[in-house]
Length: 494
Image (cartoon, rainbow, N blue to C red; front, side):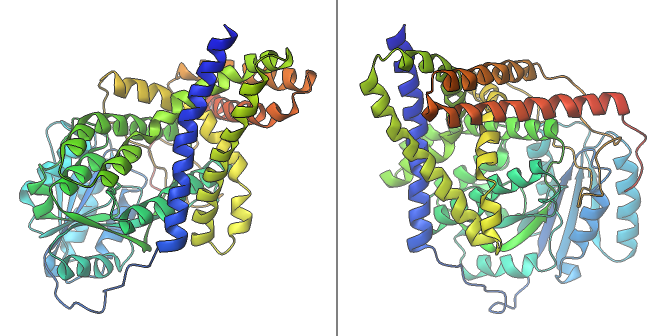
């Protein structure tokens, strides 16, 4: 039994080690090779017709903010079409209809498009809107975004400068990152992706992805690549790979930002993470055979595999957390010492992750030293979310279908705002919390055991697992309790 536990533990750490070391590749490219994409805003005077698609579903608190921002984008009004792709089933419908009517009277070409069903969810709405879109280019913004006025003047010139460009993605900015510890750790996670990963992939000539929003497509690229498809929960990642396999190229603009609201309630965040994780696994199952069968460089295939399968780490995070405790007892007995010396090298992978997020903060914020101190909290949170995301990985691998669950938004900007008492707050008790609570108690026992046997080297990791599972389970139960006992009041305008 001891040999089996050690084997499983070493195997789990090996997987985490491989993906952790991949962070070194990202940091190396960022430091040595990254260069800023030229700003072409003043180089091109042409203004092709553009359609802005705004897919929404029950977004009462933020939809007016979204429409105002979209109409505020600087572009010749006669060449700009705005489609509000509204699948809502609540008071949002009437609010949007009223707002769209006012904006049309002000001279904007804005349409309120309703479907009979939510078939295909977001992918279905985007596909239907595309049928009547008159724009040569299609910009997309989710309801939690507040696009800047210069979005089109900073992105359109890249298409006009190169007919082979199929999509331009901008960097997500966070309008409420300092709202709470939850939003601050989310901001760090997203910065790692947007400041480092997306920039490196694009610069190194590797496949990157459209992030579902805050980007703009060449309409021809969408159509020639098979259009939007709803057989995965990440229609954006799916279309991105199909387009690049067709030969289209993407551009990522790290220095052009699009502000967005981060989820401020943890159960909404867990739902979002579940969708992203499961959708990525579904896309990997669908796309990887095409990637490996395509006539593209081997390095592109290898990096695409890392990109599409990185969520596989979550089951191994959970397994490592479980096996940490019996390993304390095995090590205390003095057996298998050579294995434990060998396993110490896996700490190297954590160094890679630290450098990855260090450079993301250093490249994006003047006060990066203060922000990077949040890294241990971020790592603990990653471990705490592992149960939720492991279930998503398993469902994706087992081909279990689920509907597209949108992430509720509440127009949260600063500490004076709140989601309490508003509509859309999750009230359903997720049974996964039971496992998170059990693992919290289990890992606390591991911390105590490590201290009792003076296995001090094991304490930091045991403590991270304990704090991660404890924080996620406590906040999940707390927010559910608040939602159930304070209730959801009537919808009122923000």
